Length: 393
Length: 145
Ligand SMILES: [Zn+2]
Image 1 (cartoon, each protein chain N blue to C red):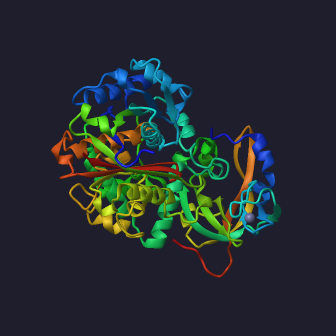
Image 2: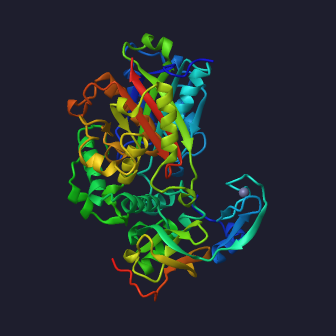
Image 3: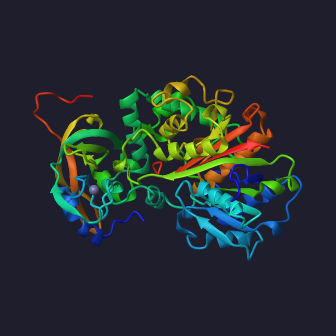
């Protein structure tokens, strides 16, 4: 069997602008990211070489649940190519990436397109509230009126109780991610905020306010993957998939041993570190799943960047800023770059691709000397997670 | 799709009304809600029914604001305002999600002692009832923020 470490390379990536995309439908968004990804392949890529499409998407609010991957492959001129939708709620993009990598390692494909897309802003308020939270336990949690932010709020309350974490520390995460997003031309929110903005905005689910939560966004992202041994045919600076892992956990929060730890992140990251032969201290930047500020805090601990319970202080001291020990969400994260569900995990690859090549479009956002990047994404309350570690060739 | 069907409610009435859990005959592990396979030892359908006491302590909580409820709770929140949802650790050791009622939602605290009561939940095709929790009062110590 082929060795998994560094067997697959990323040779191109595209990312539509995230946000309110009144100008574009599902197909247009995907096409925007696809065209950018093709154009980004330094030595060019004949679309005929693409073997298969793996596209992460939750539902696009019900518009095209069935066969959306076929629709999109055909839309970008690849009628006939195998294409499938991959669904793992917010981790759909991460699992699409995993599926694409697996297909190359299995020897089934030489070149694949991994994509993600979501159209979320066209729906009415009530419809959006119907769709949000369909990935939590509906029968025994949503039943009680528990919203998706509510589940993470339970985590925040408990983390505050166990470790003395404060609302200010959570707010600081939103401030940092907005600050990064302000420098990202693809981001949904490009406005800096202050700790007061977060603390004084209305509660959505105590202790989380509106500014502790990521938005719903329209958007798409595409990564072009190939066998590592042919990567130099496409670019002199490919990015390699050096380690990956995935794990699932109970869907219901009440079934968890701990509310303040994401076992899926612990397990998936351990697998990825082991395959790559790397440790948390080797990671220069990480794009992780900050659907809510508390999620970023807990994941900063669970991915191994600091001890359990120390997240609040570690972040407050500036260790996760660009230029700090590990740059966390230099793109702005879900919080500011935006969260078009299926697209998010692939959008992380777009960010890491450019960070590791040192060609981020704005120098203010470039992580200095970045050589190792990590992508972590999770569906639901840390239910389905993937972790990928990328290194510069 | 976030729609809990009437037959599903019918199947689970003893759980939703009376907090009936299942105890594994093989290993003694207590489950709520019910399931077919023991999540501790893997025994299949070897359970006995156990009515949970409904008494426990708040393990964690949140307050869902009036304008930020899930869709099907919109009307209830419009009338009743913000409400607290808590993860409650029952005396038997099982953790159960439930609303906290009969108190200011912002007065709920981790460790607060609560007991289960049967209350109206929301309406969707039919009126849906469920257990909720309320603070156990008159213990000689007030719960104040
Ligand atoms: Zn058992």
